[in-house]
Image 1 (spheres, rainbow over the protein chains, first blue to last red):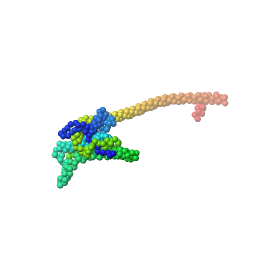
Image 2: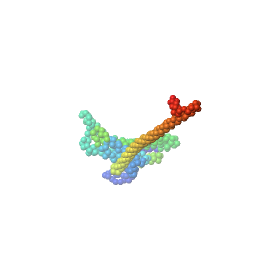
Image 3: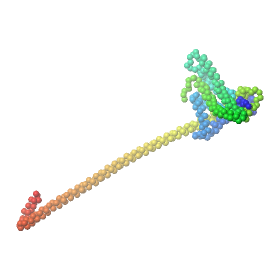
Image 4: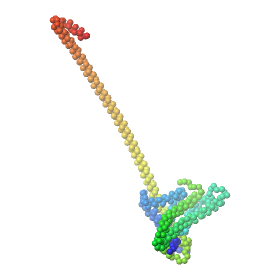
Length: 256
Length: 179
């Protein structure tokens, strides 16, 4: 009675939609959960703020809390100039947060447990940084890779290191979220699987299943923490990378 | 739980399964839906949700500032009113004291005047009385002298059987009286 911990990550095609080139586009379980993430985000931010109360309801407070959390994070990292990216960072945060959280519901699907999704989001950030960096600073943006105050003979080495670290950013950015979600869900499924396996043994098995049950409860709590934390980590790294596009010199941006 | 694991165990995958996140034939669908979902989310956030929340928070900040301003104004008004009240009270007290002082002085002066008048009248009366007493005394004294002279004359007459001269008796009485 083995449990397949990988099954939960399978993409099921519900029905085909169209074909782009050679690629078949299907409505998938992943797409449905993306829609739920987007829907819940909109529900939270639009549904609770409709009455525009000066004294907020509880849910309006939650919406305002997420707003202020991301606004303050972005402003602290990039200064006021970075606030034009606020909708972008906020959308990333809320999309990943809800994707991670609803993935924890049993029978759910975790959109962010697929590398293609996290890689797409990380590359979106990566190219936003490059395009905005050149658009705003011109070629001077390349100074990002040449820190000031370095001895001349060190510059080639430093530039290579800076370039390597810059181009490895989308990898670490995407793999961090993907691996956290994947590993968390596999662990949960394996530990929860022990409950079912032991339960099949009989009465002694039921007693023995108490331990994995307790562990599952604890792990679920931990995974909720990880879900929120990884969404926040993704967003704050986005802020840091965007700051490089806005302020390519390594000097700290002027305090606001 | 058992159902779940059964369902998972009986996954419809006959042969060697590949790891789902690396099944490249699902990438196109995922990216397609991710694009739609994220662009939709971004547009709604950027155009509707975030400006609305920013508006709510700005309105709240404004309202709080306005209320705080109004409260400060009211406090200042209350303090001004208190000061005005205290000033009025102090003025009233000063005026009351002045009035009381004046009244006291006036009453004192009147009383003094009345006393003086009374004293003057008493003096006059006293003087009159003294004069009356003096007159009476003088008259009495002259009467005493007459009586004494008569008595002395009578005594002398009785003792001696002679009628002394009236003015001689008077002289003798006067001499005795003067002693």
